[in-house]
Image (cartoon, rainbow, N blue to C red; front, side):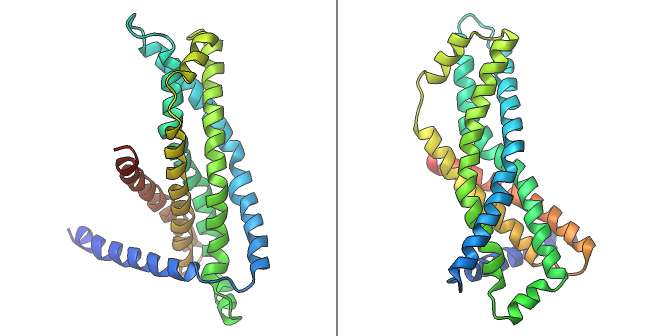
Length: 254
């Protein structure tokens, strides 16, 4: 009971501290060239380094969704091209923007929290502050901008590879013909679904980078606390994504 009662004050403290930190993050940069170099480094670390896992997961999940859809759509009243429609809408509406963002939160979020947390416990952050550098902006802003820039590219890639994997898996397994699947992914296509998915992706990208950076920045202690901060960054990042997913779905699809 005490743990439950102490949870909410701690939650309010961290939410307030998070927003206070974000106001410092978006202060005017001192040297734009330095931030530009950091931005390019973070694109390589956060974005390009995630292409492999996003591609593999998306391709095979698209194949699995297609095979499962063909297995369940065994009624003569349901046309076979509905398998293509189901794969398309599942990948675009939910799997690519949400599930891939959750995976990226585990990969990228733990890396961000671990990097900043290590700098914090080894007093490198204090050194930046002594030199007059806004450490929050210098360390966190390039990561947020890189995630906002590259995550939508990863999600579009996930959509394409997921649908491609569905086509390859469905045809290879004999679950659906190539003509039926291609007809299904073009039938009654709603372009707004892609817009909706990318709007969610931008919000998720911001949450992944900012929540992870926050938990890394408030780390105190030693190596053990850095590991705990990385774990908290992933857990709270995923929770934030799921809550934001519910809210955005209500706002954008109703």
